[in-house]
Image 1 (cartoon, rainbow, N blue to C red):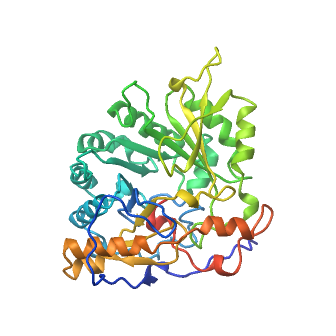
Image 2 (cartoon, rainbow, N blue to C red):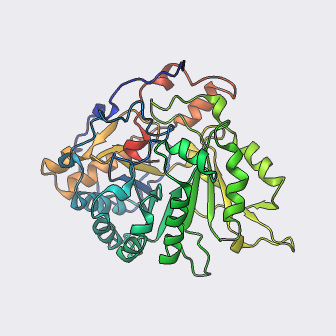
Image 3 (tube, one colour):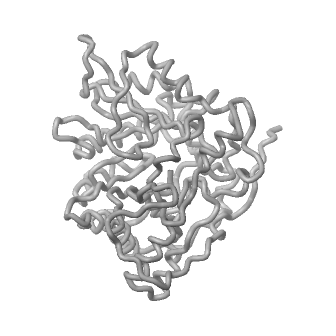
Length: 392
């Protein structure tokens, strides 16, 4: 018998009060929080639905046939998302990532991508528009996404072994169909850079010790030489339903040590401020870094907190703004939008919310827990929003 405990709490109802400041705040292209972190990255969840039931995100025990998803009328419309995105861009956001659930389940998503691709930064530059998907619909959608203006894409793939992958997605979905979707993305030119490498096509693998960590090297061997970026993500305590335990975390340091035994790798410099991954490139037979071989990266939000330069905010599918992946409450911008607030009021509200931000969950957890202990206690165990609701 399993001793797994899944609390049945609907965190979607937990909301911070959101008021329009009495004094208007003008957008100046830079907005800092209480720790002087700028706002640069907005992740937008377009649906709370997914066709996979991965244990670390949407376990079947909770997200079953009786689970009540949000009705369509409660979701932000594409026009509302575009309007809010433009206001966030005026405050300094340079990157928009569409997430879910599974974002490709949102009908006519290409329409939204086309709208967002027309937005410009205050100095007239283009935005970085990207999307995270489980790849199940990518074979059908890759070309239309590219045509709509999508520039980069990230595909979640947690194993190369078909049986392990099917156990993890828990819907018996075959790995070969995800690989076919990735091939379609390549054919459409998603993530293709000026040098002909698919550096903007990323593969994300959530690593759980004892579940799929044996798939790390097979994953690298499959994508080696294809010019793509692999990201290995420590299994995180996001939400309240995935039964997270510290013993299931494979520290990134240990992962890189494993990789270095089979591949000649070298650390790479960060490309942008606030980058979550520590990146490594492959050396060729001459001992030289070779971008055509691709790269790997590790995201260590459990064992090496990177709160200090986190510049990301997350907008849920029903318009609540969350300032941290591990947050418990969001700020209801949909209610403000639909109350008739004008752009000046919305701009001021964004500035007030981000300006008050002090979130640093991972840093606090790092001070209160060590490898081998169970989940963090007291204030760190209050209900948190689910990853399927605000995206990863």
